[in-house]
Amino acid sequence: MAETNTPLRPDLALIADHVAPGSRVLDIGCGDGTLMAALRDGKGVDARGMEIDPAKVAQCVSKGLSVIQGDANTDLAFYPDGSFDYAILSQTLQTTFRPDVMLDELLRVGRKAFVSFPNFAHWRVRMALMWRGRMPVTRHLTYSWYDTPNIHHLTIADFRDLLDRKGVKVERCWFVANGREVGAAVANWRAQNAVFQISR
Amino acid sequence: MTVGGAYPNSRGTMANGATVTASDVLELSQPLPLDGGQRLEGVRIAYEAYGELAPAKDNVVFVAHATTGDQYVASPHPITGKPGWWDRMVGPGKPIDTDRFYVLSANVIGSCMGSTGPGSLAPDGKPYAMRFPVITIRDMVRAHVALFDALGIERLHAIVGGSMGGMQALSLAANWPHIPERVLVIASTAAMAAQNIAFQEVGRQAIMADPDWQGGNYYGTGKSPDAGLAVARMAAHITYLSEESLTGKFGRRLQNRDAKSFGFDADFQVESYLRHQGLSFTTRFDANSYLYITRAMSYFDLEEEQGGKLAEAFAKTDARFCVISFDTDWLYPTEQSRKLVHALNAAGAPVSFVELSAPYGHDSFLLDVPALDSVVTGFLD
Image (cartoon, rainbow over all chains, first blue to last red; front, side, top):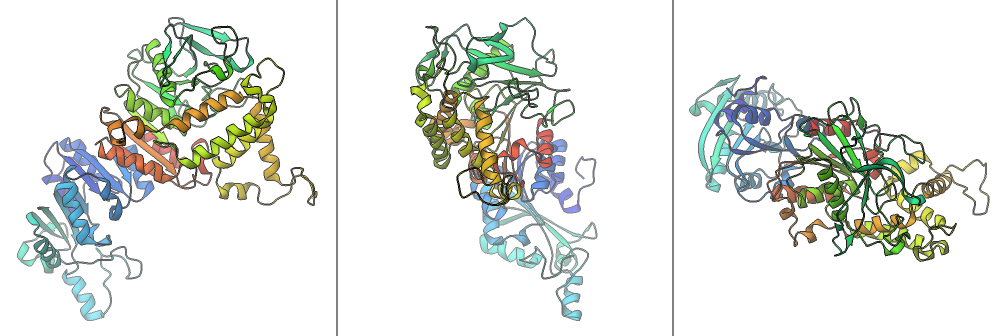
Protein backbone atom coordinates (compact mmCIF):
# COMPACT_ATOMS: atom_id res chain seq x y z
CA MET A 1 0.00 0.00 0.00
CA ALA A 2 1.03 3.60 -0.49
CA GLU A 3 2.51 5.36 2.49
CA THR A 4 -0.38 7.52 3.52
CA ASN A 5 -2.50 8.17 6.55
CA THR A 6 -5.92 7.73 4.98
CA PRO A 7 -6.45 4.43 3.20
CA LEU A 8 -6.72 4.84 -0.55
CA ARG A 9 -9.49 3.33 -2.63
CA PRO A 10 -8.21 -0.06 -3.90
CA ASP A 11 -7.66 1.08 -7.49
CA LEU A 12 -5.84 4.21 -6.31
CA ALA A 13 -3.69 2.16 -3.94
CA LEU A 14 -2.64 -0.08 -6.85
CA ILE A 15 -1.75 2.95 -8.93
CA ALA A 16 0.13 4.59 -6.06
CA ASP A 17 2.13 1.42 -5.51
CA HIS A 18 3.33 1.34 -9.11
CA VAL A 19 4.19 4.97 -9.78
CA ALA A 20 7.97 5.39 -9.81
CA PRO A 21 9.34 7.62 -7.02
CA GLY A 22 10.21 11.17 -8.06
CA SER A 23 8.27 11.00 -11.31
CA ARG A 24 5.97 13.62 -12.83
CA VAL A 25 2.29 12.72 -12.69
CA LEU A 26 -0.92 14.26 -14.01
CA ASP A 27 -4.01 13.06 -12.15
CA ILE A 28 -7.00 13.75 -14.36
CA GLY A 29 -10.20 14.02 -12.38
CA CYS A 30 -8.14 14.20 -9.19
CA GLY A 31 -11.10 14.92 -6.90
CA ASP A 32 -10.00 16.20 -3.51
CA GLY A 33 -6.37 15.28 -4.24
CA THR A 34 -6.11 12.19 -2.02
CA LEU A 35 -4.00 10.24 -4.53
CA MET A 36 -1.85 13.26 -5.41
CA ALA A 37 -1.12 13.97 -1.76
CA ALA A 38 -0.24 10.31 -1.18
CA LEU A 39 2.11 10.30 -4.18
CA ARG A 40 3.74 13.55 -3.14
CA ASP A 41 4.16 12.62 0.50
CA GLY A 42 4.99 8.95 0.01
CA LYS A 43 7.06 8.98 -3.16
CA GLY A 44 8.29 12.52 -3.73
CA VAL A 45 6.23 12.68 -6.89
CA ASP A 46 5.70 16.01 -8.69
CA ALA A 47 1.94 15.65 -8.97
CA ARG A 48 -0.38 17.93 -10.93
CA GLY A 49 -4.12 17.58 -11.16
CA MET A 50 -7.16 18.47 -13.20
CA GLU A 51 -10.61 18.59 -11.66
CA ILE A 52 -13.90 19.99 -12.88
CA ASP A 53 -15.50 20.75 -9.50
CA PRO A 54 -14.29 24.11 -8.11
CA ALA A 55 -14.98 23.07 -4.50
CA LYS A 56 -12.69 20.07 -4.90
CA VAL A 57 -10.03 22.23 -6.57
CA ALA A 58 -10.16 24.49 -3.51
CA GLN A 59 -9.64 21.45 -1.27
CA CYS A 60 -6.61 20.47 -3.34
CA VAL A 61 -5.12 23.97 -3.19
CA SER A 62 -5.49 23.95 0.57
CA LYS A 63 -3.41 20.74 0.62
CA GLY A 64 -0.67 22.59 -1.22
CA LEU A 65 -1.39 20.71 -4.45
CA SER A 66 -1.28 22.21 -7.94
CA VAL A 67 -4.64 21.57 -9.53
CA ILE A 68 -6.32 23.20 -12.48
CA GLN A 69 -10.05 23.45 -12.73
CA GLY A 70 -10.85 22.14 -16.15
CA ASP A 71 -12.73 19.66 -18.28
CA ALA A 72 -10.64 16.64 -19.24
CA ASN A 73 -12.63 16.35 -22.48
CA THR A 74 -11.18 19.61 -23.78
CA ASP A 75 -8.44 20.96 -21.56
CA LEU A 76 -5.83 18.22 -21.88
CA ALA A 77 -5.11 19.77 -25.26
CA PHE A 78 -3.23 22.56 -23.50
CA TYR A 79 -0.54 20.27 -22.11
CA PRO A 80 2.54 19.78 -24.27
CA ASP A 81 3.42 16.29 -25.52
CA GLY A 82 5.23 14.11 -23.01
CA SER A 83 4.79 16.58 -20.14
CA PHE A 84 4.40 13.76 -17.64
CA ASP A 85 5.83 10.36 -16.83
CA TYR A 86 2.34 9.15 -16.00
CA ALA A 87 -1.17 10.34 -16.78
CA ILE A 88 -3.73 8.89 -14.40
CA LEU A 89 -7.41 8.55 -15.21
CA SER A 90 -9.21 6.79 -12.41
CA GLN A 91 -12.88 5.86 -12.66
CA THR A 92 -13.38 8.57 -15.25
CA LEU A 93 -12.91 7.01 -18.71
CA GLN A 94 -16.54 5.93 -18.85
CA THR A 95 -17.69 9.52 -18.24
CA THR A 96 -15.74 11.10 -21.10
CA PHE A 97 -17.32 12.16 -24.40
CA ARG A 98 -14.88 10.12 -26.46
CA PRO A 99 -12.97 7.50 -24.47
CA ASP A 100 -10.94 6.58 -27.56
CA VAL A 101 -9.75 10.18 -28.02
CA MET A 102 -9.12 10.42 -24.28
CA LEU A 103 -6.86 7.38 -24.48
CA ASP A 104 -4.82 9.07 -27.22
CA GLU A 105 -4.58 12.23 -25.13
CA LEU A 106 -3.44 10.31 -22.04
CA LEU A 107 -0.60 8.74 -23.97
CA ARG A 108 0.27 12.04 -25.60
CA VAL A 109 0.72 14.06 -22.39
CA GLY A 110 2.07 11.07 -20.43
CA ARG A 111 4.71 8.54 -21.46
CA LYS A 112 2.65 5.95 -19.60
CA ALA A 113 -0.88 6.00 -18.28
CA PHE A 114 -2.91 4.36 -15.57
CA VAL A 115 -6.58 3.87 -16.36
CA SER A 116 -9.09 2.40 -13.95
CA PHE A 117 -12.78 1.86 -14.66
CA PRO A 118 -15.80 -0.09 -13.44
CA ASN A 119 -16.35 -3.30 -15.36
CA PHE A 120 -19.82 -3.44 -16.91
CA ALA A 121 -19.51 -7.19 -17.51
CA HIS A 122 -19.38 -8.01 -13.79
CA TRP A 123 -21.77 -10.86 -13.11
CA ARG A 124 -24.13 -8.75 -10.98
CA VAL A 125 -24.50 -6.28 -13.82
CA ARG A 126 -25.13 -9.12 -16.27
CA MET A 127 -27.75 -10.62 -13.93
CA ALA A 128 -29.55 -7.33 -13.52
CA LEU A 129 -29.87 -6.97 -17.26
CA MET A 130 -30.69 -10.60 -17.88
CA TRP A 131 -33.24 -11.22 -15.15
CA ARG A 132 -34.67 -7.81 -14.52
CA GLY A 133 -34.30 -6.39 -18.02
CA ARG A 134 -33.27 -3.07 -16.56
CA MET A 135 -30.11 -0.97 -16.53
CA PRO A 136 -28.21 -2.23 -13.52
CA VAL A 137 -27.92 -0.28 -10.30
CA THR A 138 -25.33 -2.01 -8.11
CA ARG A 139 -23.10 -1.13 -5.19
CA HIS A 140 -20.44 -0.04 -7.69
CA LEU A 141 -22.74 1.53 -10.25
CA THR A 142 -25.12 3.45 -8.05
CA TYR A 143 -26.74 5.73 -10.62
CA SER A 144 -29.97 5.32 -12.54
CA TRP A 145 -29.69 5.31 -16.30
CA TYR A 146 -31.06 8.85 -16.55
CA ASP A 147 -28.73 10.59 -14.13
CA THR A 148 -25.54 8.61 -14.54
CA PRO A 149 -22.34 10.41 -15.49
CA ASN A 150 -21.21 7.06 -16.92
CA ILE A 151 -22.16 7.65 -20.52
CA HIS A 152 -19.79 5.10 -22.05
CA HIS A 153 -20.02 1.90 -20.06
CA LEU A 154 -17.38 -0.63 -20.98
CA THR A 155 -16.15 -4.06 -20.05
CA ILE A 156 -12.63 -5.30 -19.50
CA ALA A 157 -12.86 -7.15 -22.82
CA ASP A 158 -14.03 -3.98 -24.58
CA PHE A 159 -11.10 -2.05 -23.17
CA ARG A 160 -8.60 -4.67 -24.32
CA ASP A 161 -10.13 -4.56 -27.81
CA LEU A 162 -9.72 -0.78 -27.96
CA LEU A 163 -6.12 -1.01 -26.80
CA ASP A 164 -5.44 -3.63 -29.49
CA ARG A 165 -6.99 -1.52 -32.20
CA LYS A 166 -4.88 1.46 -31.14
CA GLY A 167 -1.71 -0.57 -30.77
CA VAL A 168 -1.46 0.40 -27.12
CA LYS A 169 0.64 -1.88 -24.96
CA VAL A 170 -0.61 -3.25 -21.63
CA GLU A 171 2.34 -3.13 -19.23
CA ARG A 172 0.43 -4.36 -16.21
CA CYS A 173 -3.16 -4.86 -15.21
CA TRP A 174 -5.03 -5.62 -12.03
CA PHE A 175 -8.60 -6.67 -11.38
CA VAL A 176 -10.44 -6.07 -8.17
CA ALA A 177 -13.53 -7.73 -6.68
CA ASN A 178 -14.68 -6.71 -3.22
CA GLY A 179 -11.30 -5.21 -2.44
CA ARG A 180 -9.38 -8.34 -3.50
CA GLU A 181 -7.47 -9.02 -6.64
CA VAL A 182 -8.83 -11.65 -9.01
CA GLY A 183 -7.10 -13.36 -11.92
CA ALA A 184 -7.18 -12.07 -15.48
CA ALA A 185 -8.85 -15.21 -16.81
CA VAL A 186 -12.02 -14.64 -14.77
CA ALA A 187 -11.79 -10.86 -14.53
CA ASN A 188 -14.41 -9.96 -17.11
CA TRP A 189 -16.96 -11.94 -15.06
CA ARG A 190 -15.79 -11.38 -11.57
CA ALA A 191 -13.99 -8.02 -11.32
CA GLN A 192 -15.89 -4.91 -10.35
CA ASN A 193 -12.95 -2.71 -11.21
CA ALA A 194 -9.97 -2.89 -13.52
CA VAL A 195 -6.69 -1.00 -13.46
CA PHE A 196 -4.43 -0.90 -16.52
CA GLN A 197 -0.93 0.47 -16.85
CA ILE A 198 -0.46 1.22 -20.53
CA SER A 199 2.05 2.76 -22.93
CA ARG A 200 2.61 3.22 -26.66
CA MET B 1 3.10 48.25 12.72
CA THR B 2 5.68 49.77 10.45
CA VAL B 3 9.36 49.22 9.98
CA GLY B 4 11.55 51.23 12.33
CA GLY B 5 14.29 53.72 11.73
CA ALA B 6 16.93 51.38 10.29
CA TYR B 7 15.74 52.27 6.81
CA PRO B 8 15.72 55.51 4.88
CA ASN B 9 12.12 56.32 5.76
CA SER B 10 10.46 59.50 6.71
CA ARG B 11 6.89 60.22 7.64
CA GLY B 12 6.25 62.25 4.53
CA THR B 13 3.73 64.94 3.96
CA MET B 14 4.36 66.90 0.86
CA ALA B 15 3.07 70.38 0.24
CA ASN B 16 1.15 69.13 -2.73
CA GLY B 17 -2.36 67.92 -1.93
CA ALA B 18 -2.14 64.98 -4.28
CA THR B 19 0.68 63.31 -2.41
CA VAL B 20 -0.30 63.56 1.24
CA THR B 21 0.38 60.33 3.06
CA ALA B 22 0.44 59.05 6.58
CA SER B 23 2.45 56.03 5.47
CA ASP B 24 6.12 55.33 5.76
CA VAL B 25 7.96 56.64 2.75
CA LEU B 26 11.12 55.30 1.18
CA GLU B 27 13.10 57.81 -0.85
CA LEU B 28 15.23 56.16 -3.51
CA SER B 29 18.76 57.49 -3.60
CA GLN B 30 19.22 56.33 -7.19
CA PRO B 31 17.05 57.34 -10.16
CA LEU B 32 14.54 54.66 -11.15
CA PRO B 33 15.02 53.46 -14.75
CA LEU B 34 11.75 53.26 -16.67
CA ASP B 35 10.60 51.11 -19.59
CA GLY B 36 10.03 54.29 -21.60
CA GLY B 37 13.76 54.95 -21.46
CA GLN B 38 13.69 57.77 -18.91
CA ARG B 39 15.03 57.79 -15.38
CA LEU B 40 12.83 59.08 -12.63
CA GLU B 41 14.68 61.16 -10.01
CA GLY B 42 13.90 61.31 -6.32
CA VAL B 43 11.30 58.55 -6.33
CA ARG B 44 9.28 58.22 -3.14
CA ILE B 45 7.48 54.99 -2.31
CA ALA B 46 4.77 55.10 0.35
CA TYR B 47 4.08 51.80 2.04
CA GLU B 48 2.21 50.18 4.89
CA ALA B 49 3.14 47.03 6.76
CA TYR B 50 1.18 44.76 9.09
CA GLY B 51 2.44 41.99 11.35
CA GLU B 52 5.97 41.22 12.46
CA LEU B 53 8.89 40.67 10.12
CA ALA B 54 10.53 37.35 11.03
CA PRO B 55 14.25 37.55 11.85
CA ALA B 56 15.03 35.59 8.67
CA LYS B 57 12.75 37.97 6.72
CA ASP B 58 11.07 34.93 5.20
CA ASN B 59 7.44 35.65 6.05
CA VAL B 60 6.74 38.58 3.74
CA VAL B 61 3.48 38.67 1.80
CA PHE B 62 3.31 41.61 -0.58
CA VAL B 63 -0.18 42.78 -1.52
CA ALA B 64 -0.24 44.63 -4.84
CA HIS B 65 -3.15 47.03 -5.17
CA ALA B 66 -5.55 47.61 -8.04
CA THR B 67 -5.98 50.66 -10.30
CA THR B 68 -7.36 53.10 -7.78
CA GLY B 69 -6.30 51.15 -4.71
CA ASP B 70 -3.54 52.08 -2.33
CA GLN B 71 -1.27 50.81 0.41
CA TYR B 72 -4.02 51.04 3.05
CA VAL B 73 -4.85 47.36 2.73
CA ALA B 74 -5.95 46.82 6.31
CA SER B 75 -5.82 50.23 7.93
CA PRO B 76 -8.24 53.14 7.59
CA HIS B 77 -7.94 55.30 4.51
CA PRO B 78 -6.52 58.66 5.59
CA ILE B 79 -8.96 60.69 3.49
CA THR B 80 -12.20 58.71 3.58
CA GLY B 81 -11.66 57.15 7.01
CA LYS B 82 -13.08 53.89 5.63
CA PRO B 83 -11.52 50.54 6.64
CA GLY B 84 -8.67 49.26 4.49
CA TRP B 85 -9.80 48.01 1.08
CA TRP B 86 -8.93 44.38 1.89
CA ASP B 87 -9.67 44.49 5.58
CA ARG B 88 -11.74 41.32 5.25
CA MET B 89 -8.76 39.42 3.81
CA VAL B 90 -5.78 40.81 5.73
CA GLY B 91 -5.49 40.78 9.50
CA PRO B 92 -4.97 38.55 12.55
CA GLY B 93 -6.49 35.13 11.86
CA LYS B 94 -7.69 36.21 8.41
CA PRO B 95 -6.76 34.43 5.16
CA ILE B 96 -3.65 36.61 4.83
CA ASP B 97 -2.85 36.16 8.48
CA THR B 98 -0.85 39.00 10.04
CA ASP B 99 -0.17 36.76 13.05
CA ARG B 100 2.01 34.71 10.70
CA PHE B 101 2.93 36.99 7.84
CA TYR B 102 4.56 40.38 7.53
CA VAL B 103 2.13 41.92 5.06
CA LEU B 104 3.59 44.72 3.00
CA SER B 105 1.83 46.95 0.50
CA ALA B 106 3.13 49.94 -1.42
CA ASN B 107 1.40 52.65 -3.38
CA VAL B 108 2.32 52.24 -7.06
CA ILE B 109 4.36 54.99 -8.67
CA GLY B 110 2.10 57.17 -10.80
CA SER B 111 -0.51 57.11 -8.02
CA CYS B 112 -1.40 59.84 -5.55
CA MET B 113 -1.28 58.29 -2.08
CA GLY B 114 2.31 59.15 -1.24
CA SER B 115 4.34 57.55 -3.98
CA THR B 116 5.78 59.68 -6.75
CA GLY B 117 3.21 60.49 -9.41
CA PRO B 118 2.12 63.27 -11.72
CA GLY B 119 1.01 65.35 -8.74
CA SER B 120 4.46 65.17 -7.12
CA LEU B 121 6.99 67.95 -7.44
CA ALA B 122 9.51 67.56 -10.23
CA PRO B 123 13.16 68.53 -9.61
CA ASP B 124 12.26 72.08 -10.75
CA GLY B 125 9.94 72.42 -7.76
CA LYS B 126 6.74 72.42 -9.80
CA PRO B 127 4.31 69.50 -10.09
CA TYR B 128 5.14 67.10 -12.90
CA ALA B 129 1.60 67.07 -14.28
CA MET B 130 1.87 65.76 -17.84
CA ARG B 131 5.65 66.02 -17.76
CA PHE B 132 5.53 62.86 -15.66
CA PRO B 133 6.84 60.02 -17.82
CA VAL B 134 4.41 57.36 -19.02
CA ILE B 135 5.08 54.33 -16.84
CA THR B 136 4.37 50.63 -17.16
CA ILE B 137 3.28 47.89 -14.80
CA ARG B 138 6.90 46.70 -14.81
CA ASP B 139 8.02 50.18 -13.72
CA MET B 140 5.62 49.98 -10.77
CA VAL B 141 7.09 46.60 -9.86
CA ARG B 142 10.64 47.92 -10.29
CA ALA B 143 9.80 50.46 -7.60
CA HIS B 144 8.41 47.70 -5.36
CA VAL B 145 11.64 45.74 -5.83
CA ALA B 146 13.61 48.82 -4.79
CA LEU B 147 11.51 48.85 -1.63
CA PHE B 148 12.25 45.16 -0.98
CA ASP B 149 15.96 45.89 -1.43
CA ALA B 150 15.82 48.79 1.00
CA LEU B 151 14.05 46.63 3.58
CA GLY B 152 16.54 43.79 3.08
CA ILE B 153 13.86 41.45 1.76
CA GLU B 154 15.28 38.99 -0.77
CA ARG B 155 12.36 36.60 -1.13
CA LEU B 156 8.62 36.97 -0.78
CA HIS B 157 6.62 34.16 0.78
CA ALA B 158 3.97 35.37 -1.66
CA ILE B 159 2.86 38.23 -3.82
CA VAL B 160 -0.90 38.58 -3.97
CA GLY B 161 -2.87 40.84 -6.26
CA GLY B 162 -6.29 41.31 -7.80
CA SER B 163 -6.93 43.06 -11.11
CA MET B 164 -3.97 45.45 -11.71
CA GLY B 165 -2.41 43.89 -8.61
CA GLY B 166 -2.44 40.56 -10.43
CA MET B 167 -0.57 42.17 -13.32
CA GLN B 168 2.11 43.33 -10.89
CA ALA B 169 2.34 39.84 -9.41
CA LEU B 170 2.85 38.34 -12.88
CA SER B 171 5.35 41.02 -13.83
CA LEU B 172 7.38 40.30 -10.69
CA ALA B 173 7.44 36.57 -11.44
CA ALA B 174 8.45 37.19 -15.05
CA ASN B 175 11.10 39.85 -14.48
CA TRP B 176 12.39 39.12 -10.98
CA PRO B 177 11.83 35.35 -11.00
CA HIS B 178 13.94 34.69 -7.91
CA ILE B 179 11.86 36.92 -5.60
CA PRO B 180 8.40 35.34 -5.24
CA GLU B 181 7.88 31.85 -3.81
CA ARG B 182 4.15 32.03 -4.44
CA VAL B 183 2.22 34.12 -6.94
CA LEU B 184 -1.51 34.58 -6.40
CA VAL B 185 -3.31 36.26 -9.29
CA ILE B 186 -6.98 37.10 -8.83
CA ALA B 187 -9.38 38.38 -11.51
CA SER B 188 -6.56 39.51 -13.74
CA THR B 189 -4.87 38.88 -17.07
CA ALA B 190 -1.49 38.52 -18.74
CA ALA B 191 -2.48 41.13 -21.31
CA MET B 192 -5.05 43.88 -21.21
CA ALA B 193 -7.80 43.06 -23.71
CA ALA B 194 -9.20 45.50 -26.29
CA GLN B 195 -12.46 45.89 -24.37
CA ASN B 196 -10.61 46.98 -21.23
CA ILE B 197 -8.36 49.35 -23.17
CA ALA B 198 -11.53 50.79 -24.69
CA PHE B 199 -13.29 51.39 -21.38
CA GLN B 200 -10.21 53.04 -19.92
CA GLU B 201 -9.89 55.29 -22.95
CA VAL B 202 -13.45 56.49 -22.30
CA GLY B 203 -12.35 57.42 -18.79
CA ARG B 204 -9.25 59.25 -19.93
CA GLN B 205 -11.15 61.16 -22.60
CA ALA B 206 -13.77 62.20 -20.02
CA ILE B 207 -11.00 63.68 -17.87
CA MET B 208 -9.24 65.41 -20.73
CA ALA B 209 -12.53 66.82 -22.07
CA ASP B 210 -13.12 68.62 -18.77
CA PRO B 211 -12.00 72.26 -19.25
CA ASP B 212 -10.75 72.25 -15.67
CA TRP B 213 -8.17 69.64 -16.66
CA GLN B 214 -6.20 72.47 -18.30
CA GLY B 215 -3.86 70.19 -20.17
CA GLY B 216 -3.06 68.53 -16.86
CA ASN B 217 -1.77 71.74 -15.24
CA TYR B 218 -4.58 72.14 -12.74
CA TYR B 219 -2.46 71.83 -9.59
CA GLY B 220 -2.60 75.05 -7.60
CA THR B 221 -5.25 76.64 -9.86
CA GLY B 222 -8.10 76.04 -7.46
CA LYS B 223 -9.84 73.99 -10.09
CA SER B 224 -9.52 70.32 -10.94
CA PRO B 225 -11.29 68.13 -13.50
CA ASP B 226 -13.67 66.62 -10.96
CA ALA B 227 -16.55 66.32 -13.43
CA GLY B 228 -14.39 64.43 -15.91
CA LEU B 229 -12.85 62.23 -13.24
CA ALA B 230 -16.31 61.45 -11.85
CA VAL B 231 -17.55 60.35 -15.28
CA ALA B 232 -14.44 58.19 -15.69
CA ARG B 233 -15.17 56.57 -12.33
CA MET B 234 -18.84 56.06 -13.16
CA ALA B 235 -18.01 54.29 -16.42
CA ALA B 236 -15.34 52.18 -14.75
CA HIS B 237 -17.57 51.34 -11.81
CA ILE B 238 -20.15 49.77 -14.13
CA THR B 239 -17.46 47.47 -15.48
CA TYR B 240 -16.59 46.29 -11.97
CA LEU B 241 -20.12 45.03 -11.32
CA SER B 242 -22.19 42.31 -12.88
CA GLU B 243 -25.53 42.90 -14.53
CA GLU B 244 -26.96 40.55 -11.91
CA SER B 245 -25.61 42.60 -9.01
CA LEU B 246 -26.79 45.91 -10.48
CA THR B 247 -30.26 44.47 -11.04
CA GLY B 248 -30.32 42.94 -7.58
CA LYS B 249 -29.12 46.10 -5.89
CA PHE B 250 -31.18 48.67 -7.80
CA GLY B 251 -33.48 47.15 -10.39
CA ARG B 252 -35.55 49.96 -11.89
CA ARG B 253 -36.29 51.49 -8.50
CA LEU B 254 -36.63 55.26 -8.31
CA GLN B 255 -34.52 57.44 -6.04
CA ASN B 256 -36.50 59.20 -3.26
CA ARG B 257 -39.49 59.85 -5.48
CA ASP B 258 -42.74 58.21 -6.45
CA ALA B 259 -42.71 59.02 -10.16
CA LYS B 260 -40.28 59.81 -12.92
CA SER B 261 -39.42 63.51 -13.04
CA PHE B 262 -39.52 63.90 -16.80
CA GLY B 263 -36.20 65.66 -16.38
CA PHE B 264 -32.57 64.69 -16.04
CA ASP B 265 -32.19 64.40 -12.30
CA ALA B 266 -31.01 61.08 -10.98
CA ASP B 267 -34.48 59.52 -11.16
CA PHE B 268 -33.20 55.97 -10.77
CA GLN B 269 -31.38 54.62 -7.76
CA VAL B 270 -28.65 53.27 -10.00
CA GLU B 271 -28.07 56.77 -11.39
CA SER B 272 -27.89 58.29 -7.95
CA TYR B 273 -25.51 55.54 -6.82
CA LEU B 274 -23.18 56.07 -9.75
CA ARG B 275 -23.17 59.85 -9.31
CA HIS B 276 -22.26 59.36 -5.68
CA GLN B 277 -19.49 56.90 -6.60
CA GLY B 278 -18.11 59.34 -9.16
CA LEU B 279 -18.23 62.35 -6.89
CA SER B 280 -16.75 60.69 -3.81
CA PHE B 281 -13.93 59.28 -5.93
CA THR B 282 -12.78 62.83 -6.76
CA THR B 283 -12.15 63.54 -3.08
CA ARG B 284 -9.54 60.80 -2.86
CA PHE B 285 -7.98 60.46 -6.29
CA ASP B 286 -5.95 62.60 -8.64
CA ALA B 287 -7.17 62.83 -12.24
CA ASN B 288 -3.69 62.78 -13.76
CA SER B 289 -2.82 59.69 -11.71
CA TYR B 290 -5.90 58.06 -13.23
CA LEU B 291 -4.56 58.85 -16.69
CA TYR B 292 -1.10 57.46 -15.98
CA ILE B 293 -2.18 54.30 -14.17
CA THR B 294 -4.77 53.29 -16.75
CA ARG B 295 -2.16 53.97 -19.45
CA ALA B 296 0.23 51.60 -17.72
CA MET B 297 -2.50 48.95 -17.65
CA SER B 298 -3.33 49.33 -21.32
CA TYR B 299 0.36 48.86 -22.16
CA PHE B 300 0.50 45.64 -20.14
CA ASP B 301 1.14 42.63 -22.36
CA LEU B 302 3.40 40.03 -20.83
CA GLU B 303 3.39 38.01 -24.03
CA GLU B 304 4.66 40.93 -26.10
CA GLU B 305 7.22 41.72 -23.41
CA GLN B 306 8.54 38.16 -23.74
CA GLY B 307 8.84 38.23 -27.51
CA GLY B 308 5.49 36.62 -28.29
CA LYS B 309 5.71 33.50 -26.14
CA LEU B 310 3.82 33.91 -22.90
CA ALA B 311 5.17 30.63 -21.52
CA GLU B 312 8.69 32.08 -21.72
CA ALA B 313 7.68 34.61 -19.09
CA PHE B 314 7.55 31.85 -16.49
CA ALA B 315 10.46 29.68 -17.58
CA LYS B 316 12.89 31.12 -15.05
CA THR B 317 10.84 31.08 -11.85
CA ASP B 318 10.34 28.21 -9.46
CA ALA B 319 7.39 29.94 -7.83
CA ARG B 320 4.07 28.22 -7.31
CA PHE B 321 1.15 29.97 -8.98
CA CYS B 322 -2.51 30.17 -8.15
CA VAL B 323 -4.90 31.84 -10.58
CA ILE B 324 -8.47 32.66 -9.62
CA SER B 325 -11.27 34.04 -11.75
CA PHE B 326 -14.94 34.74 -11.10
CA ASP B 327 -17.77 33.50 -13.27
CA THR B 328 -19.55 36.88 -13.35
CA ASP B 329 -16.43 38.96 -14.06
CA TRP B 330 -16.88 40.24 -17.60
CA LEU B 331 -14.02 42.74 -17.32
CA TYR B 332 -11.38 40.05 -16.76
CA PRO B 333 -13.26 36.97 -17.91
CA THR B 334 -12.23 33.43 -17.04
CA GLU B 335 -10.91 32.79 -20.54
CA GLN B 336 -8.10 35.29 -19.92
CA SER B 337 -7.12 33.48 -16.73
CA ARG B 338 -7.22 30.17 -18.59
CA LYS B 339 -4.89 31.50 -21.25
CA LEU B 340 -2.47 32.48 -18.52
CA VAL B 341 -2.81 29.07 -16.87
CA HIS B 342 -2.13 27.27 -20.14
CA ALA B 343 1.07 29.30 -20.54
CA LEU B 344 2.09 28.42 -16.99
CA ASN B 345 1.37 24.77 -17.77
CA ALA B 346 3.43 24.92 -20.91
CA ALA B 347 6.29 26.35 -18.85
CA GLY B 348 5.93 23.45 -16.42
CA ALA B 349 5.19 25.81 -13.54
CA PRO B 350 3.25 24.40 -10.59
CA VAL B 351 -0.06 26.16 -11.05
CA SER B 352 -3.52 25.88 -9.62
CA PHE B 353 -6.52 27.47 -11.21
CA VAL B 354 -10.10 27.83 -10.09
CA GLU B 355 -13.07 29.75 -11.40
CA LEU B 356 -15.16 30.70 -8.40
CA SER B 357 -18.84 31.40 -8.52
CA ALA B 358 -19.76 34.79 -7.06
CA PRO B 359 -22.47 37.25 -8.06
CA TYR B 360 -20.56 40.53 -7.85
CA GLY B 361 -18.65 40.68 -11.13
CA HIS B 362 -15.05 41.90 -11.16
CA ASP B 363 -15.44 43.36 -7.66
CA SER B 364 -15.93 39.83 -6.29
CA PHE B 365 -12.28 39.73 -5.25
CA LEU B 366 -12.94 42.56 -2.79
CA LEU B 367 -16.21 41.24 -1.42
CA ASP B 368 -17.53 38.46 0.76
CA VAL B 369 -16.75 35.28 -1.18
CA PRO B 370 -15.97 32.53 1.35
CA ALA B 371 -14.61 30.21 -1.36
CA LEU B 372 -11.98 32.85 -2.15
CA ASP B 373 -10.94 32.97 1.48
CA SER B 374 -10.38 29.23 1.63
CA VAL B 375 -8.32 29.15 -1.57
CA VAL B 376 -6.17 32.09 -0.43
CA THR B 377 -5.67 30.52 3.00
CA GLY B 378 -4.74 27.17 1.50
CA PHE B 379 -2.40 28.59 -1.10
CA LEU B 380 -0.45 30.74 1.35
CA ASP B 381 -0.10 27.92 3.88
